Image (tube, rainbow, N blue to C red; front, side):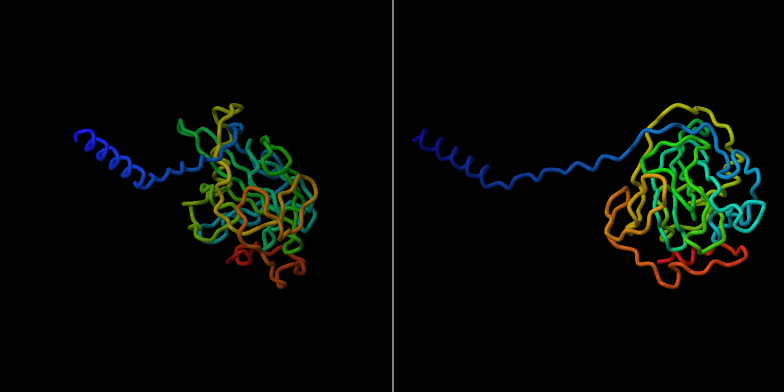
Length: 270
């Protein structure tokens, strides 16, 4: 009798274990994507290196207005078309594509630097380039050639639009971000306060693939000639979910004969 009860109890336990639902496996969170890059030893101006010799700031940074600086050659007109554009500091190229929509060819470089005994990260953005001379994922040095001054495919007279981003999620998007010092630095003020920095030459890890942009741009350049928009491209560091259609009114407008303010913010609205 006892043996019978033993086997009955054992059978019930086994049946309960078999019938019990499996504990769902916990999906581990995705590992952060990082890359190794040099720590910046200081920042220089992106034209007329290192001190912007031969250039002037045609338009400055203004919160909730113009969110970067426009740099022009002192000779005026399009005499600066094709002039060299340099990386403001050591860093890693995280974006190098043709964006259109008032931006033209754009390069974004991620920099990491020591300040107040901690590592900080910023992005520098170079817009309206005539040609891109670097590729995504490339290490660049302070003062290295990254592109040439352009017109955003004829939208503007030749000049460089230059930004410094506190927020490394923005990339080339402004939607959903405050247009003030929360997300941006005044480029000249930032550079002048960081001409020489400690820790330069060391290497460290920096976050990559942080952009929240969901539009599809042209395939990343391999350096050299600029690329046209490729709606079928899904490669590179940005997620691809939708495709940009460039409005005919802003695709290739006639260039003004005089310098006018950079209105890419209006053309880039969503």
